[in-house]
Length: 297
Ligand SMILES: Nc1nc2c(c(=O)[nH]1)N[C@@H](CN(C=O)c1ccc(C(=O)N[C@@H](CCC(=O)O)C(=O)O)cc1)CN2
Ligand SMILES: [Mg+2]
Image (cartoon, rainbow, N blue to C red; front, side):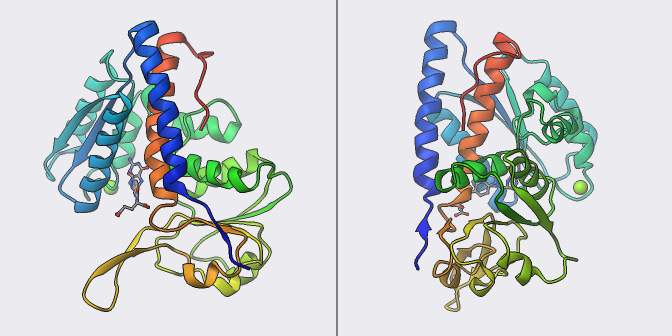
């Protein structure tokens, strides 16, 4: 069996087109232009690329963006002051602080300063709590994108056994919450988990988010399972050049899985599209109230 390749790039483009259309409607009907403020501290090359992609795609969708680039030595208090100033602005509906922040910055304190209604990444404790209570919440972009990719191949997930490998606040924990809301039987595995191959063999849905290149072997995967690879690892390809690989050993996994996301071109593009979605939906809620119509992922 060879797996269906779940095309994250094409899915993200379709979502981007729907966002662009709704943004255009809001401009005409309500003179509302969603605004996204992006905060980047330091000069980490990967973060610069991601932030550049976010602002470029925001602009292409008609979302206004406000860039704040701070030097590596920026303090926690400076960041909190900036976040508070952005909270107060009427033209800013979404705020995102690119992670990781440099060592020495208290990232929890910075994220806690974001107005939960403008929390475009869904990292604020209020949104984390709402998600775990099953209340309307802004959901972190990567798991939201993963769920949409899983839905393409499993429209009804009820009763499926789902394994989330990784317990980060950004991906693993919210991913598990979303799968639980979809009535999956969810297991979270992590660095201390025993017998990961056995857990993989029992899983209909596998989401790998551990940040270790090709750590999940194809032989572990249950034949026909849906495999979502969140990993983005840059490795030396042996000839001195670097290439991107996921957390799953794609070449062996593609022969056993029923469906699989590639790296690149799988989850990554959905993360950015979902950020724009969260910003658009925040703008609609801020302007029209909590019952405002929301664009679905
Ligand atoms: N504030 C946040 N920080 C971080 C997040 C986040 O969601 N919010 N996630 C990651 C990084 N990230 C977005 O910020 C991100 C990573 C990768 C991609 C992506 O499109 N990847 C491409 C490959 C890109 C490449 O060539 O390097 C792909 O997978 O096809 C998008 C967003 C950590 N920080
Ligand atoms: Mg820190």
